[in-house]
View 1: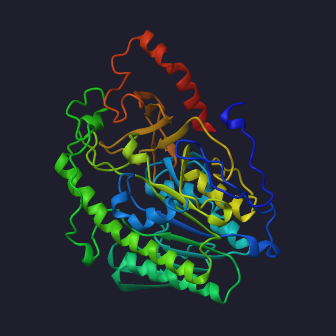
View 2: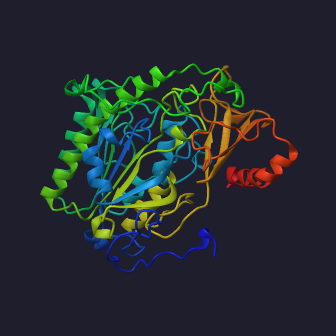
Amino acid sequence: MSDNDRPRVSRRGFLAGSVAAAAAAAVPAMAQAATAGPAAAAARPNILLIVTDDQPKQTEWALPKTVGWLAGRGVRFTHGHVTTPLCSPSRSSVLSGQYAHNHGVRNNGASYQLDQNTTLQRYLKQAGYRTGLFGKFLNSWTLAQNPPHFEEFALLQPGYADARWNINGTVRTINGYTTEIIKNRTLDFLDEAANDSRPWFAYVTPYASHGPRTPEAKYAGTAVPEWDGRPSVPEADRSDKPDYVQNATGTLADGRRIRAEQLRVLRSVDDAVQAFKDKLTALGQLDNTLVIYIADNGFGWADHGWTKKSVPYRPAHEVPFYLSWPAGGLGAGTTDDRIVANIDIAPTVLDAAGVTPGHSQDGKSLLTSYSRDHLLVEFWKQGTAAGGPPTWSSYVAKNKQYTEYYDLTTDAEGVVSGTGRLKFREHYDLAGDPHQLKNNLYLATPQEERNLGISALAAQLAADRVG
């Protein structure tokens, strides 16, 4: 039986106990019938979905309370990814469960291409959930336009201090640190559960750790652990990489600075998550709240000289990913080594809530035994200006990664144009070369390509791109 053919876990009742131990793929429990309706509302979990901004995987130092709660009383996914390492496409995948080539938000300018009727908030609100958004929504979304299907919202115009907000339909400036404001608005929303018996969905999206990475005053100058880089920082010989990587100028000093700034702004996120836990405990709702924490993409600390995102290298598309739901059997503090991604969040939440979506989803519920052997990761270049990564797609497995770059670009609406000509290829042995230092296709002979199985990888990637 292949991984993709594994049977689903029974949906009848909660399964007691925990997921498998450290190196084993977890098989979480699932409860609730597939049909949604007010009569089932009391049994459904609340949903707390936290999505940070530009947070790479190696940032747990800044999040001791978050990790202690969500990994200590839940699941840490060791192979968490985003399917497009760019803010708006990734967030649209979180909310829809679809790849960017299916939901249409191929770049940060194309946010209005997302069909809002395919989103988590729409399905949950329709199923009787109280819905709230607190923080960033989608890049290029007009601040004055209310985000659809949210009953309450504090929509942030991205920034760290004294920012502009749309508060339930009124645009105004609110002085103060935005992570703190998001925390307090979320706590007010949770407090309403004392007088409103409906289950709730809180979508919490702080701006951290996006640039300019301005820390809260109490964390300004906070000492962070020393960091001596890693073999990919900055990688002196990049002759086997595409031109934009060969031209990258990031240094170890740049990586150290970005890392320190990110860790400092994430300390405020950690405080907010602890406040959410305390509030849920006081409300008696901690156990039956499904909490998911993920970043919208990772970020380079001068890996291969790159100090941004949008690239097919592990620091950009691997992200922290935690899930906790004690009442659903996911509260023991375990690890799950399946390949999981942002596209799996919407299917997981709807599965837990007993809601069947009315559109096709590319992701799979993490509350089943489903396990994939690889993941499609994709990116589109916006505009035709020189510099930056071209459009690319990548086959990502645990032990290898194969990437193709294309002559394709998108306009502000995400419409694709170009010849589609293959411009460059990369293949990395992630087991032996985890930092992606040696491109095995650079000057490779036909026999070496055959030994790597490139023909089969290219065929699978072509199929994934249109799937």
